[in-house]
Every structure is written in structure tokens, then in C-alpha cells.
Amino acid sequence: TGGKKSQNRECSTVVQKTTLFITRYEYANLYHTYTDLYNLFLAMKVHADENYEGLELDPVQVVFLDGHSKSHMDELWVKLFRTKPTYVSDVPDKTCFKKAVLVAPGYTSPLSIFMMGKKSRKLGQCNLPPGNQFIKNFVQEFKQAFGIKPRSGKPTILLVSRHDYVAHPRSKPKSGTSRKFENEQELLGELANTFESKGYQVKLATFETMTMQQQIQVSELL
Image 1 (cartoon, rainbow, N blue to C red):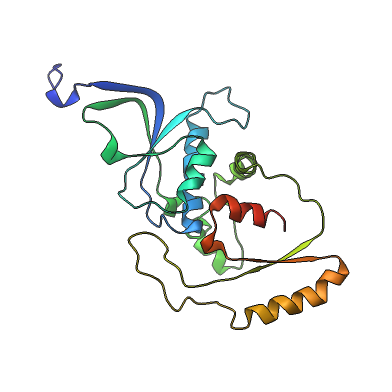
Image 2 (image 1 turned 90 degrees about the vertical axis):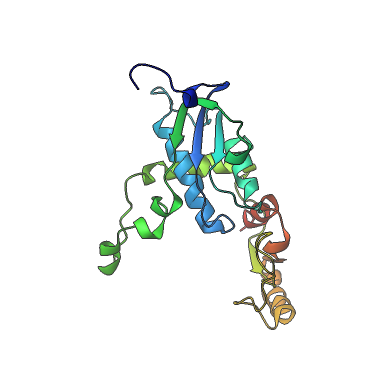
């Protein structure tokens, strides 16, 4: 105050890149991770240069304000934004940012069901809120980041198996996972016998044992 710099405002390092700060909540949940990813994508679009028209994302730095453990979802951040996010605890003291952007939490994302218009849902409608005009850009950017190409070959029937699993390092082993097939092998065999002769291929996938890249590669066959 008074035109004088306080001691706390002295910078030992100034980050020139646009830096986006975000707090994740349900960080090990795929749906909630997508709401966070989309919010950050929207923030980049809003703060991009006015001449920005393409799908290539500008170089940015992402800082997680939370202290969550690692999870399979981390791969999505690295692939999509082409940068490894930094935890705020790893940011050196007296670091300043030339352009800092605070990203809204995932619960407020246009992709969140909570933001789809509760009144509209009661009327049997579903209105797309402001921000979803960029969803096509987001999908294209996601496909490009993960090398997703147009489907070809035989149509696929994918049976997704669910086993007991550990969602993240701080969680306890999850037992009694719901929505499991009691006759998984029997069902797989019946699907193969019924549909493979009709030109379909039948596959089994256990997502909790796969990386995000592997899950996407399997899903893109559908």
C-alpha cells in the first residue's frame, strides 16, 4: 500500500506462460475428471488470443491447487494439454505468474448434470447451457491428442467386466463392486456364438486394469 511494494510481492521467479489453476474434487472419477478438463479447455478458449481459430492449444502451464494422490486420470491431463501439471506444493516460494487464470470447479461445468437446468429437467427437457458451443472443438482436440481415428472393420460388441478394485492410493480395496456379471464367461460365449457368425467381433474389457490410453483404444472400436 502507499505505492510501496510489500515484501510478500517480491518475485524470485516470474512465469511467462499462461498458467491455469484448478482444484479437483472427484479426481479419480472419470465423469468428474471430464468436467474439470472441459472447464480448463473453456478457460483456454476464453483467454486465448482473439485471432485464435484453430484447434491447436496454446502452450500453458497447469497447476493443481489440491493435494490429491495420483490416479489413472492423470494421463488425460498430460495427453490433452500436452503438459505435465504441477502441484501447488511444488511451486517455489515467491513465484509470480504473468498471466494466472483461476478455473471454475467441475461442479459448475457446462458438462455437469447439475448445470443442465434443473427446471428444464423437471419439464422433461434438457437445455444446453452457455459454453457447450465448444464441445465439438473439445471432442476433436481429445481425439487428436489420443490418436483416435474413424472406425473401420467389423462392428464390435464390447462386454465391460467389473471386478473389485482400488480407485486410488488413498482408498481402501473396494469389495462388493456393484453391477458385476455373475455368469461373465457364459455371457461372453453366448454373445460370440450368436453374433460372430453375423459379422460382429465380441471382446471383453476390464477397464480397471487398463491405462486410459488402452481404454480409449478399445472404446474407439465401437
